Length: 371
Ligand SMILES: *Cc1c(COP(=O)(O)O)cnc(C)c1O
Image (cartoon, rainbow, N blue to C red; front, side, top):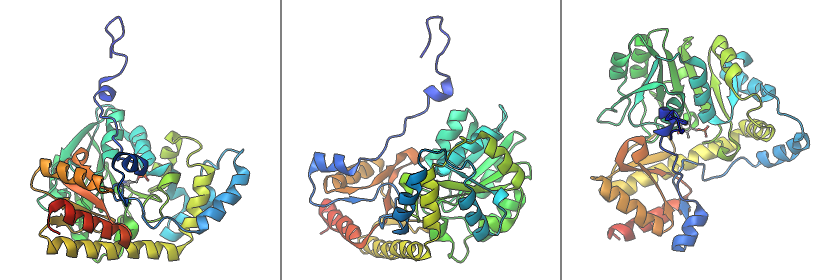
């Protein structure tokens, strides 16, 4: 878009960004197709809901709603620091990991610097990097749909400021092992920030060869976590970063002063203290994944085993992926095509409650004619 003088009003890096296309809401699907049942398995949300302790906490916090939030989320920050064996000064809270990614982009890049990640990963990173106008090198994932850490290290040049690895990755659900990660951390220069997005940490942490990024104790590692997934608080928008105190101090300067909100902070603190809910939430996902793997094995469907809360289904072509997603939608099963994540022939299925998995299976059988 140009002004009358021909000078662009909107810079090119913004104009060329693709707007976020949200999945269909339950209300839209009901109105369009009137299915008998609904299973929303599209956005990696927690189908179990959230801790029952959250309701009481936000009722109480509601009394402070006329006041600005605590800009450093003191209580929540201390709780997170304590549990992770770091100091409060190592923790920053913001409105979801997406906001943290935006903060990283605002804080660390000089104009000519670049970032490196995989070609099939979290769109939120692509978007925030694009908004900041940073050059992004997208390295193809391996044949096992994993980050190609060797190729990423090879792509580092004198202008590289950041490498971003979601572990486990979204949308693939795959992960880089401890061995691979050891090598990576050793081979990324100290002046390059290693951002490890552990949005699915709670599902992944007990997997035997899963590398816990915090264990590496390197000043250039920034770990991201969120309350949106296993804690079931996506609607509240709370995420955090754990990193070196100097880095956090500078990130504090660029975050929006009063994020996350008062209610978000209270909800997250209550959820963080409910280990029973967390265990249940991880357990539901484990069982539903096992069930889905078996179903797929029985019906000859290609998929990637996952250590997050979603499973990626691999179809032969993009067309088949489009058709399958649409047919399932008409049955009330909302799935996510992941073309925007760089995998046009794949579909991401968030695993849900047993009744939702059953609805998925029945609909699958009808739609594919295998039933
Ligand atoms: C879901 C997800 C997030 C979460 O973002 P929030 O802004 O905290 O809701 C971050 N990173 C990845 C890789 C994700 O899949």
